Length: 125
Image (cartoon, rainbow, N blue to C red; front, side):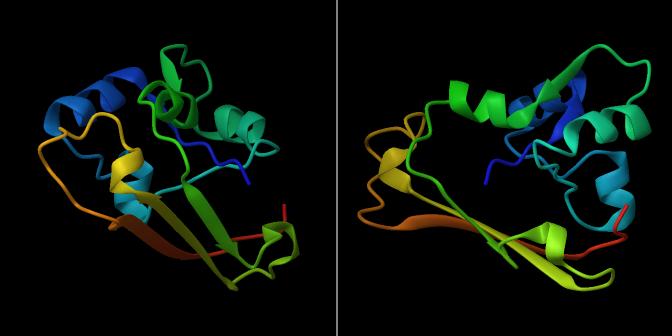
């Protein structure tokens, strides 16, 4: 499943400069990174970014970084079936060797870069 993170371009560019992305204001306030499925992007833009034009869809940015072979697992698989308050887990893993911008002299062997986030579904709207 494809997931998107919508952020102002300035926030994303600062994250590149800092070497990490801790989240945008709403992520920091809620304690987790908000993501959108393709079907949710339009509503996310209307609800949280109305009138803003200098935005970045992070999934598109990740493609530009030349990261291939990433595995995204979402539990439950169909988050549309999750009940309000039910835990939803997103786990992303990718082999270090598949990340083109990691310098070649850093040999991580067959190790995987893994990130996992747990959240609760807020509503069915």
